[in-house]
Length: 455
Figure 1 (cartoon, rainbow, N blue to C red):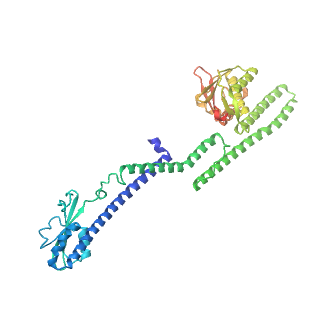
Figure 2 (figure 1 turned 60 degrees about the vertical axis):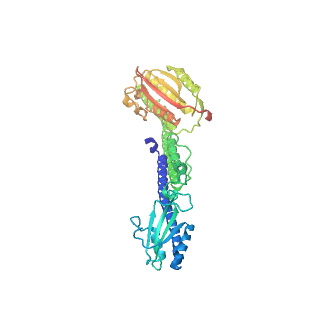
Figure 3 (figure 1 turned 120 degrees about the vertical axis):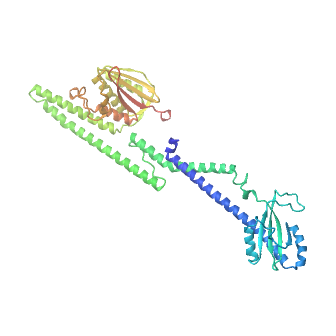
């Protein structure tokens, strides 16, 4: 549940769904109450109209003719008769009601009016409906000559919508469930639509770490998203330019140094002291080696070589064969029959550096290649002293050397592993070091395998 709420899209979905459901429940409750109130007012108004009509009809005829007219009132759904007093008939059940207020307003304040509701109402003559289906209201109204008339009106029971028992009505459970499903779908679509640009921006930021030259984001959508995409593209452009400037500066410096170093070497040949001449030539060779590796470092950070499908088994076999021809103790085992998307020259330089390090500081290189979880795993093991655990990450830094085994006397410049790591990362791979329990160092190079769709 915590992971579900952790997503901004899921949070928006829950908030939208909860907000809409709460608003719908509140408005439905208010609308239902208003509807009930309106229907009751209509029923009361209808009842008041009927009473007003009979009162006005009886009010205008002589007293001796009133009983005849009232006997015929039963045909219109109510009983009516003249009475002497209302005090005995109207007891605890008599109270102010909307019907009484309406009649008082229509007939005048000088009339005496009382309304009583009967819950046990005898059925009307000639009907089959019992008291369970009807209720009665008994109304006492004084006429203009102060005579008192008693009206007993039958009215149907309240409809289910007024009693709150609307089973299967418009607010039934099946309609509520369907409504909630539609609202949930709408909230999900809105949440997906709102978070889609954010997901694209996060994906672009992730891809930027592996490929600074990736295509820029499309600056489309709402204003805020366009601004964010524009800022991201501008940032990518500035980073790319800074890397290019640094790389070009390093390449220019190292390239321009080669000419004076070459002239210096030629002039050292004219030094008369043989011992001094050899020392100067050795120092110059070290400087030239640093210049060459500086150029390799610059190329590893910004290689313009084209990516292409590469048979990794053939490349590794070729690199190991070249090392063995050069007199290094190198053996290769295993095969994968896999292809990787790579820059052939750069990847060859990476493998060559790793083999040279193993043979230079570990006397030999035992190379193996296997396929693990759609990744090519190349392991290079040696029999050297290894690297202290605290410095396994530091050795990837430029010009970092271990004094015990990688001094200038051995020709190390501290750039070999840096170049190899840069090339591995440019190929979306990983380069790891670990000390073997039996002694020696293991270098693990992992590269992603090309999928069939990319071949």
